[in-house]
Structures are given as structure tokens and as C-alpha cells.
Length: 381
Image 1 (cartoon, one colour):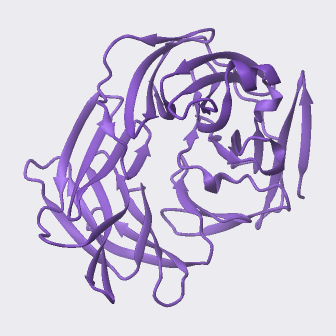
Image 2 (cartoon, rainbow, N blue to C red; image 1 turned 90 degrees about the vertical axis):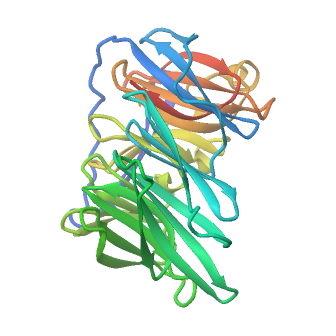
């Protein structure tokens, strides 16, 4: 059964879109979010402003949000070329010269940070870093080296974050790496065969041995990969997504109906709550006048709930009070049961704001905080 439903609650119409899996072909209405106690939550908010990534600390409960004047452990840095998040862990990569780079690591749970220079061993070269990933003690950088005008070599560099000597191992690949993720003690590498087939594949490396143990063809038009709390790997396309068991490598397809695609392939980051629902920026299509809107996707029920700004803010709030141009970030405050929505202001490229709303079944706008920067990512303690 395939579904496409519009639920009108209170003063807003909340679009719920569903799809069908290949195995059971069924969709059901999702359960309501569980009630959460009113417990104070602290946020570390990363902001993008004038080519810099900076941070501020925020104090929040279920009714109000304020700026914490304390210094954040995250220093201002030039906006990175590559970014990777995994829960409270953050990894960044910056290119310093044509043959040198720097990685920066942050643990927002432990308030720890560090950095490391890499590629200093390669000498005079033409190097491009394509993707990064990290675990608690390991950092991965996928890169390519131009050997000649007709020959390019591809590698994944593995760096031990616990080592004092910047030890690394290079693993050679036969295709261009474009994205990576870590789950179930394995590194999943999305690759593209640019020379022959123009098709994507997924290579899997055992992190205990640094050996490539599996490869599967993915065909054309892969948009991105990401992981779920259950350690599954999601391979997204425009018209469907594949759910891959990271241990057994078994998989199933979820096909979308026409005009019901959840469009999470456009989101750079996603946040999963305790029930497994994913919060992300969605390409709105005909659902909103704004190019990207907040959305929540339930993988168990195969339903997406779209929170278009028109549905919970008046036109005066959108256009004049908050000056919303587009969604820049979506997350969730589990303890207070609130969706966190970062946005860019239309009046100034360097300014933004943070909205907080209650999710369905009792949607409600809670508050807004104007910011000297555009929200990029948020970490909730």
C-alpha cells in the first residue's frame, strides 16, 4: 500500500508523505513522539560567517533560550573544505597548500579538541581530498593524486588519533572515493568509476585489519550515503533508497511514489532521535515557497513529516520579524521535545537565526533567537 496524506492540525497543515518497501509493500501511520520532561539542555551551536566557522554556547529549557557568555572550546576556524559528524564527534579538513592539509577533531561531550598536519610526506604533488570520516580514535581522509595528466591514483589515509607520532596507513583504491562513513567497526567508501562506466560502488574496509572485505555495485545516480542508529547504511537516490545491513551486507529497497520522495539526499547532516526518526533539511519542491524546509523521516513507517515555514509562522514573522530565506540546519532537543531549525536571513548573508517548535501532534512555535552568523550544525548535551 502506498500513501500520501495531509493532516491538518490546529492552524497548520502538516504534509505527511509515505513510500513502500520491496519486501512488505506496506506503510502505516507513525506513532506520536513521546512526552519529554522539562529538563535544561545546553547547546553548542556552530555558525558560518564570512568564511569562518565559529561557535556559541546556548542555555535552553522548554520555554526559553539564552546565550551563555562562557567561551566555547571550539575555536574560530577558516571554513573547512570537508566536514564529518558522528554523534558528539566532529571532524574537519582544511587544505593548506597544494600538497598539505590539516585535520581538526572535536569531542563536544568531553570538551576535547586537537589538530594534525597531514600529507607532509608527499613532497611536490597535486592532491585533492575528496571525503573524510572519523571514529573515536581514527581519522580517515580519502584523496587522489595526479600522477600524470592521464593517470590519477586514489587512496584512503588512516590516521591513529591516539598516536603521538602522527602514524598513518595508506590504502589504495581503484576508483574515485566521493564519500565515507564509519559504522559497525567498518569503513564504508562510496566510489565512482569516472574512467569507464560512470557508475557508483560501495567498498567496505574492516577497521581491525585495514583490509577491503567487500564491494557492491550501486549503479548510476547515487546521491549520498549515511547511517542509522541501528548501524544500517542508507544509499539514497532520487526515487528510492537502499537500506544495507552493515554486518551481513543484505539489503532492501524502499521505492517512493510520484511526488512523495522524502528528499533527504540533499541534506548534508542529519540527526536521529531516540526512536530512530531523522531530522533534516528537505528540498521542498511544491510543498513550500522556501527552497529547503525542515522535515522528519520515520524509517520504520516510511513516512516523512514536512514542517514548511508557512505552516507555523505568519507571513509577517517570516518576511519581516525573522526574515527567513532558507533552512540551514535541523536537529532535535530530545529532553525538551523541540525541533531546532537554523535558518539564513534574507537581509544579510552573514546573519541567521534559530527557531524552536513543538512537533506534531501538538505543533507550536516556541521561540526564535537572532544570530550573528548562519547556523551550520548544533550539538545538544
